[in-house]
Image (cartoon, rainbow, N blue to C red; front, side):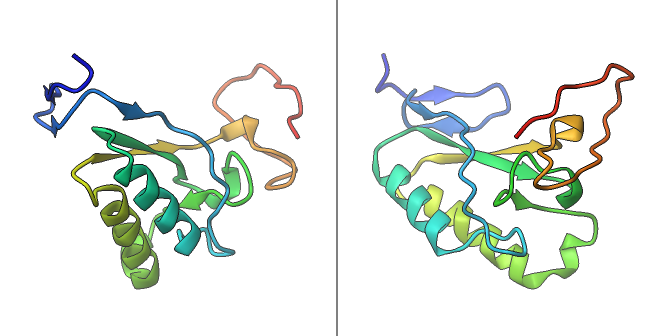
Length: 132
């Protein structure tokens, strides 16, 4: 069964049911863009035969990242051609052998490490414990 194709409810066709789960890589450059290390990593995973690869944390706000080194996409990113090109290259690397590439978007909120933001915020009034 693991090697049989699967159609997801959204219509995406997976060549098999093996999925690389989301992990945090911390390999983005100083501008929170993916680079050669991430391209090679996803190319290697793509060559491994998984039906789908779920990306590591791709944050929507550089102020509230899960950790330093996360990839980030922010408002106005459509005008950042270097970011768009690097994201496209990352997706192409992950899809190199027919795997689906699924992006995990995130916003760490108050769970942001102090190494990223000393005053993280979140939607809850409940205080969170400091992380990292």
